[in-house]
Image (cartoon, rainbow, N blue to C red; front, top):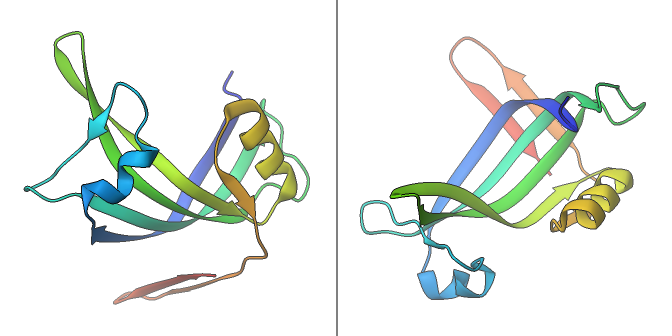
Length: 131
C-alpha cells in the first residue's frame, strides 16, 4: 500500500530559463543539472491535489487542496544509464499537517500559506489560477 495516493488535476506549468550557477546550492550529491537544448530550466507549477488518501484513508479536510511548487531538473548516471529526477526548492500548500509530515518524515521543503484557486474550463480554453 502506498503511503500517499492522489490525483494531480488542472496543472499549470511555467518554465523559465535560468543560469545553472543559481541552482548549484540546491543540487543533491551525486546529481547534475539536467540541460535541455543547451539550456537550464526552472519550473513554477500549480495544481490541485484531488482524492488524496494517506495509507488508503481520506483524511477530513485534506482530500482536495492546492499546491504550488518551484522545481528544477536533475540527472545521475547509475547502472550504465541516465536517471532523471526533480529537485523541489519550495512547495507551498494550505494545510499545516501536510507541511509538518512532508518536512518531518521526508525532509521536504514545504511551507504553509493561505491559498486559493480559480478554474475556468470551456471547450476552447482552460484557465487555471493559483494564489
